[in-house]
Image (cartoon, rainbow, N blue to C red; front, side):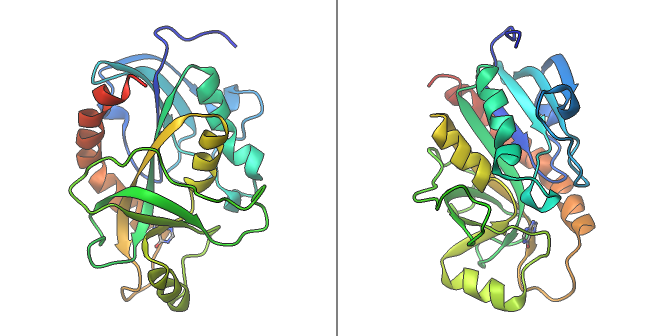
Length: 237
Ligand code: HPA
């Protein structure tokens, strides 16, 4: 694989509907998932399935627009393959963002929750039981850090599941990030995650992916500002 110049140091993953592209002050190249050997195309709405090599806050980065999920029918190796690619392109630090439901009063729709811990709903496709699946860094956003519970999806949680996750100290719940975090640990990469809270779990009315995308789009600008502030500090390991 050809080396990228300048070497990207930080990989940033934009989740459902999250638009991080305007963070880039320079763009060197972009390519779709389909151009990467072994990588499936993104099928979930709001996931473009593309990498952009560029610069943000003076730091060479790769922006991954969209990701793969178990609920699209992929296994652990497929879902986490972008992490191997980012490592091969030179990245030492990963910033994951995702759309998630808020499980506590302090983590309601509109919050950007720094992920302090990740826990996973029992799922037969995990390669092994994750032990301490916690990000290495917790980035300040103004919302108290919390625990992100990963669920396989694609259905949103039932009221009973929401109550169960609340009892297990959940701050937010979503369908991504945990597999990628586990892979980043296996590869010795440093990682942080921020959950964009698009809905309050247990609120009345049905939840749709369309609503999640709209909310995530609306919070993207504030998220870009926060990530841009943190980036210079993350350039060195
Ligand atoms: N549950 C799971 N995943 C989600 C949610 C939710 O409430 N909101 C956005 N992604």
